[in-house]
Image (cartoon, rainbow, N blue to C red; front, side, top):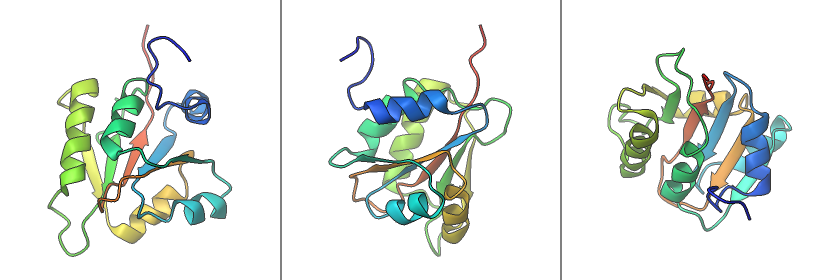
Length: 147
């Protein structure tokens, strides 16, 4: 156990977050996402947070992960099939958490489902939550910490 570190941040997850460099992307996904297939196809780390909701996982990750301030949209979400403009309830919740931790000006983009899968295969690591709500799929681009 560590002081001031959310216990959801497991040793493997902390290792991945710490090892990521500026511009690397973390793929944070729901239980419906083919996380095992995406991670194994590219030999990316798969970090399972079974039984953990998307909100709890996102809260913990945003508590330590700086988002990239050099790009207009450091968060990308998966679009709802047939309705790319609407945000799923889980997306509203995660983006509200991002605004709390990173500021209300944090930019959010979206990717069509298969474009999201392709982008996920390039991510640094895949974090699979136990959240069953659909479209809880995000790419988070790591930023830098300025002294």
